[in-house]
Every structure is written in structure tokens, then in C-alpha cells.
View (tube, helix red, strand yellow):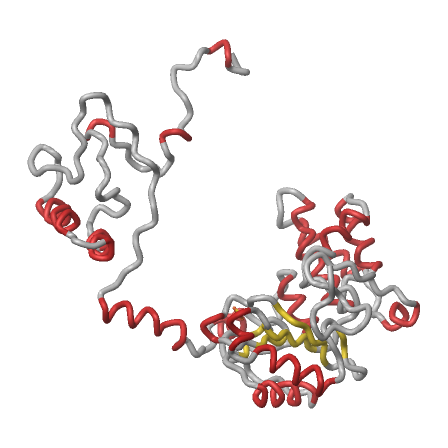
Length: 344
Ligand code: FES
């Protein structure tokens, strides 16, 4: 597997990261030690889960919140607390790109260079920052202020090109705005993200990802979560769809039970004898009269029978099940031979 374009020699590669964990004596000497407080917090995380090993991912973030990466000491702590081998912890820590193999800078700047961001300028942004900072993918500036990385799609394509700092979004960037952002970070400023919570730093957000609040109290946490955002790109599609009368088709439901032999297939329940209200019968008629899939989906969405399988045969009234979405095939069999039961 080859390194990303622009990566320096020995830098991390894409996918399964084969780069070694940084355990050089100089690095380890500079790290704040993991303390009894770290262990207490690790146990607090473990107590949240029915299975202790489920706590491993937030515990790795906890380690990063203290030491800026998943250090050998952190791997040993997680293994010790969870009864796992260090190899098992390392296998998880090296699988995900959010776990760093060498100490990250004060801020982690991630530039999306995936398809949509790339064609709209993401690669130019990455190249400019890399040249300005003199570092490549997964490298940190000499003053420890910035770690730069390529990122795969950050799930914000409607805001492309996207840059995140410590996983907070800075949308619709260009080369100059990204340069200004990074310059401000290096001066110690924290420009507010274009949406979401205020910026902290890499260790601070790692603590949040471990499940510990960064906010002084509940009100401050709520204010951060409810912070204003620029949502126009996301809502633009919704508005256009509303103007055009377009709706998404309903989610597919469970497959209908096979009709009994000789039972006529119906696409819409006939009026009379079904127990439906006049409103439901009118809605059925609107669905049946729709000419196109889009019209049909729109009529279905306003149908009072949410979840009904429009256009599919309805089971006879006596066989309709209430209060469950369990498909027939998933229901426990009844009338089974008691000799087959473990409890018999
Ligand atoms: S391609 Fe960049 S956010 Fe999706």
C-alpha cells in the first residue's frame, strides 16, 4: 500500500496504517504521565457498558486526551483494565485513523481531498497548507501547533470543500480562507466553526469523544450544542423538492405474507367491510390514482395509515398484526414440538 500523494518518507499510509507507534525516548520523556486519575476515568468509561471491552474505543480517546496520541503506555493501560492483550488493543488502535500513532499537535487540521471536495479545490487547499507549514500528511509543525492530514469524505459534501479542525467544521473553504484559518490557529486564536460547538483543541475534543464534557455546566454544554449554524446548503435541496412537489419514496417495509391459494390480490382495500374510515378510503384512492412513482410516494406520505404497504396486497383483516414491525419470518414459531425445547 503506498503513501498518500504528498506524504513525506515514512509517513502513514492510507487504509491499514503500517507506520510504527512513536516510542522514541525523547517523545516519551515529554509526555504527561497517565495517572491514577486516568485509571479512574477509564473505569468510569468501562462501567457504562455491559461488556467491558466495548469501552475500548472511548478509552483510546481518553489516552489521547492526556498524551495526544495512543502511546505504548496508553495501550498497556487499556489492555490492563480490560483484560486484553496489548496486541488486541493495538489491532484496534491501528485500524482507525482517529487514533494517532505519534503525538498530534495542539490542533489537528484535516483537509477533505475526496472526490467532491477535491474537484472544488480541496486538493489545492491541502497542497497550499502543506507548502506553508512545511509538513506532509500526518506530520506536525516544529512548534507543535498543527498536525496536517488528508481526510476521506467528511460527510459534508454539500459544504465542499471542507476543512475540519479537531473535527469541527469549517465549510466551503478556499485556499485563502484556509490559510487565514491556520494562521489564526498558530497565533493561538480559536475561530468559531461555521457550525456546531466552539473549537477546543485536539486533546480537548479527545476528551469529549471519551464521553467527558468540556463545558463548565449543563447550560454551557447546551449552548454549545445549540450553537447557530449555516444550514443553507443542506436545506436548499429540501426547499427545491418542496417547490416541485417531490418527496422521497417511503422506506420499504416487510415483505407481505404470501397470499392463500385462491385469494384475490388487491392493490387497494375495497370500500366497505374493511373497517377503514372514509378518510383512509379516500387516501387509498389517492394512492391508487397516482400516475408516477413520485406522485404515489407523495400520496403515501400523507396517508393516515403510516407504514401501510401501498400498492401491495394487504393481508386479510383477520391476519393483520398490531403493534409490531417484526416480519413474519422473524416471529417465533408456535406449536413446536416440546421435545425440541431445551426447557422441556
Ligand atoms: S467529499 Fe469532502 S465532505 Fe464529502
